[in-house]
Image (cartoon, rainbow over all chains, first blue to last red):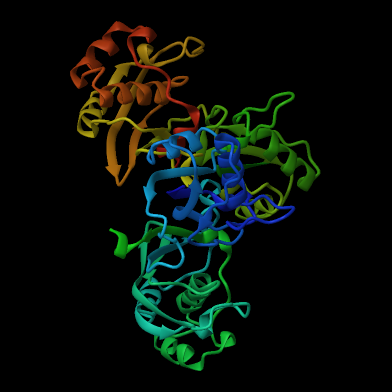
Length: 248
Length: 248
């Protein structure tokens, strides 16, 4: 048996999310089916990040075990020819059997894009959240920096968070504007359920002036979901990269 | 009777192009239908640029005549609430009845995007042409500059070009790369049928090394479509802007 690592990009628009489900088309289900039909084995991938419906990825990660003797790097090519055009493997290689994409230390980077202009741009409607009102990008960036470091993110996760500890470490968080696109980029050692979308929703409130950058500290301290802003829509979010520092 | 100017953005993916057609869903047909139903008049827009199937626009232009007394700037809002999300009016205002979007001097800007990386990025598959091979961006940019000025573009237009003169003036043409996206931007006083896509296809050949930047002059002089490169795919092309210098 061999374990194969996949780096996966997808446009999440037409999927119910990463995780396999009955009666819904998922990224994982689509990949498992393509692999199983191709290899003639019953393949079950294990994903690093169970992205929600509508969320995109440039570099999600999954592994699967196979009896196949195909060279590790060839799975990307073979699988891409069997996948729809909204899912594309970026690279594949063999990893040791003990590598697990979730129970291994990771550094994850997400991007949340806000298209800030008078009217929507149809060519960018699927991977950015459109907001027409004025947003103070400097204030948003100042607020973003308050998330850097180890913090208890209980105020910034949805009620159905399953994990015990709500402490995570953020390595960098910034907000940048180029033309009419505001991009919030955040890197950390892990993210709770809906955490990036709730932080993005809170930063939008900061941009509007409804929350002040210096209020973030207090919102974190309250450890209460209702203290933070709303959950920003899924389609603005992209999982950019997952790094495995122990394995590189 | 009043004449209303519309600046229109669209994702051309799901349309047969700008021009109204039987048995096909066009941008123009979709806008005409929305306007006619809303205003209770039989509305026929006149477009500035009849973009092909799959081509996008950030700023195509159309006008229509109406008896309606709605303020000019309000048509954008009212129409957007009646249009699908892949078409979005960017602004509307009243113009003199003698303004015609095609029989008026214009400056048009197009962008052709080439995603140049090992594997496709599904989130950018609809508005860029994916090419995995190595491309020499400096050579492409050098070749692009050869198009600047007044030239006979007979070598760079499709056979079914209807217009008599094939002379056009290009004000600027450049190729730029940011991360893995190569963008070719061209501005001119007019473009022949498929001209930007044939120039883009020729620049890709330059990028590959199959055509040299200094060959462009000779290709122009031949006045023969077969001397130029292939027509690049429609989905990489976006009509960015149409300016009306006489009216500004």
